[in-house]
Amino acid sequence: MAADLNEMNQKIIDEFRSNGGVVGGPFEGMPVLLFHHVGAKSGQERVNPVAYRKVDGGWAVFASFAGAPNNPAWYYNLLAHPETTIEVGTDTVKVTTREATGAERDAIWEAQKRDAPTFADYEGKAAGRTIPVLIFEPA
Image (cartoon, rainbow, N blue to C red; front, side, top):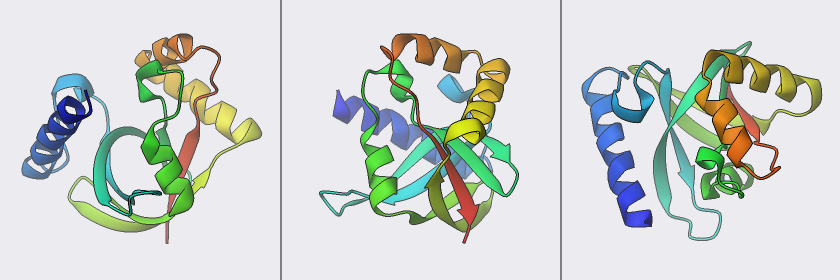
């Protein structure tokens, strides 16, 4: 399973970098960025593609894990190592990661579900888990 996910992510990363940040497949029509992170336990450097939402002062990403009952490992990696780099279009930006909470989180999440209904589906599958919203802010 993990090998399949890594292979799929690598194809998306390659497509992103070859096409100036535009990808098809499961991300067709969605804004996508790549974020770099370091494994909280392994120390291994990784890159993941994720859908994002532009917010005042940064970019919001969603630890939906396609509606799994647990958060993705990268969520914990970003909390452990919040200083990182993202790739948006053809730009590379140094950022600091923070978790949105309360009314800020709720407003961003509701807008994301409205504009990308797949995220509402993920929420329904998440077995009551509150899907975290992380904000990348320019460092």
